[in-house]
Image 1 (cartoon, one colour):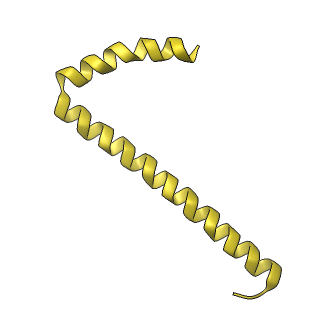
Image 2 (cartoon, rainbow, N blue to C red; image 1 turned 90 degrees about the vertical axis):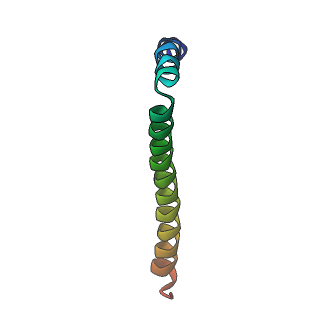
Length: 61
């Protein structure tokens, strides 16, 4: 199912990238920036949770 969806999206996406190369690069960079911000945010939340759990368990900061 996923492979079929990927194959259906591949041709139009490649055509779009060939027709508008600069716009597609900007869009892809914006998408990657959002993905990286989400990843960094998730790591920060995990680290903050560990610190908070240590504080709650031990009572020391």
